[in-house]
Structure formats: structure tokens, C-alpha cells
Image (cartoon, rainbow, N blue to C red; front, side, top):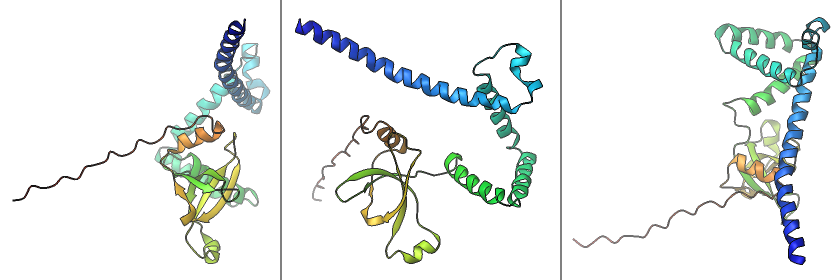
Length: 218
């Protein structure tokens, strides 16, 4: 009887391990698609696809949004598009309140989303939030501005993400001597953080030991 109960429990847990990630993935996708569908509300009522088709088609807003983003990116890659973007940014920069906000957001988005950007350069191990307690952080650069005048040694700027949501976290400036660079990719470190330490990356393969060779005497 005990063996039968154990088998049933094992089968149930196996099914749960398969269905839970699938359910969470579908829930997140549904949330993203539902949010993107809300962009259809920006269209005039006479342009609403629901009025033309006669019924609501889920996911249509997401498809149109992705298509619009692709078209904008395609148009701004040529010379004329780049000139129009620069003209637009110059115009927005002169608008009070809106200009500084737009410029700040653009600088952050360029750093995070640009294909040539390097927002998270390396995965690091630092002592945080207290001595003897470690966490994973990402190298974002070096301190600048007047901050450098108040630091007595070499410091680095790091981002410490929270788990399981790495989009929120803390910006810290820590001594370079107290930072441990990890032999781990940024993607692997992010997965490690999101999984709350459950999905640990594989240990790096140690470099093969080279035996010293003795040259024969001449």
C-alpha cells in the first residue's frame, strides 16, 4: 500500500512539474498579449478592427503592434529616417518637462536595448547586504561625475537585481578589490536569479593541466 501511495505521489509530482511551467508561461504570454491588445484603443472608433470584422479577435493588437514596431525600425534605418528621428528628438528636447524626461528614458533604453549596447557587461559576486552574505550582481560601468572626487580607491558600478523579478534592484558602487568576477554568462546568471537559485549553472570546466616537458640535452 505504501509503495502504491509513493508511486501515485511520484506520478502526480511529475505531472505537476510539467504543467506548472507551461501554465505560468501561458499566463505570462496571455498577460503580454492582453496588454498589447489594449493598443487598439488608441485607434479611432471607426478604425477599430472589431467593427470591421464584427467580432473581437484576441491577439490582433499584439500582431499589429509588433508589425508597427518592425515598420518603424525599418523606416528609421535609412538616411532619411535617421534625419527625421534626429529632428524629432531635437524638437522634443526643447519641450519643458517632457524634454529631460524623454532624454533620460532614451539614454536608458539605448543602453539596455541597443544591439551595440553593453548594459550588463559581466556577472559578479559581491558581499551584500552584509559581510559574509553574497549575491550576484552585474557590472554596469564605473562611477562618474563628482562622485569620483569623493571615492578614495577604484570603484565599479554594479546592479543588484531582486529575485524572482530582476527588473527591480539596487544600484551600488563597490570597491573594485571586493568584486569577484564570475566565469558565468550574463544569461546564465539571470536564469540563476529568476529561479531563486534552483536552476544553478553548470560549473566551468577546469583548464587542462599541462605537464612540463624537459628538453633533452644537446
